[in-house]
Length: 309
Image (cartoon, rainbow, N blue to C red; front, side, top):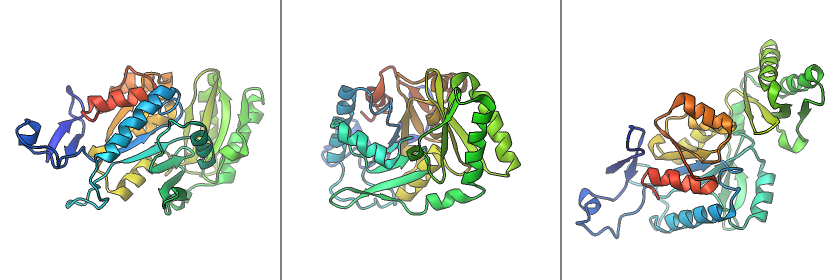
């Protein structure tokens, strides 16, 4: 099979063009039976896929056309890899919050999968009605070394330490058994992280901290050590049979850094927050593209750089 490099100046993973021979690529063969490579695209929602309705609509048109160009059946190829592409949104939102967003945004493309609550819940759309069902097996993996009560106590301890004017617990619907979230003032986020890490170490809880947001406040998420956007992405990728070379992520904020640290290609949209752009500037990851365009047009720009749009 033919390979396309993700970028012209580096050597990140290559995408596999199934059914496209060298003669077809050279324009000397009929390409009617060829089709785009099957990819798993995992995109953040707020600030990435949504935020500009025209850009969201342009992406939806692109993705629906890609679906239309896929083979007529959903069976795997001879090598066991998927023959059709899958779209997944990885978001800090809960399933209920996603459904509210989708109901209010007619331009948003319905995905095949959802990774919700910063990588602590995974859902798939099933049946003719497109019902969302939690994927079995993922949440069960998150309990190793984790204690919700201890995580919550460490977050509530920040209020005692810094005061209610600088720290608050987020509403109950933003919490779950594997995610504790609080809001902290941006100027104390490092101190808050240090305090929570110390408290969790005393309780022998295995956890990771993720913060994101712009302006005066940050979201601070306390997650199980085995949870998060990258781990949930890899769980879904392996479940679907996609290689890392055929997986792409897109995001705009600090909580997208984790899923961009994987061994696959990623897109940073042009309106990205400083947490993410600073990480990119320091790391200079060859498999990450920094788009000039904002929101969903930045995703399309990144896909174009990978010869996929």
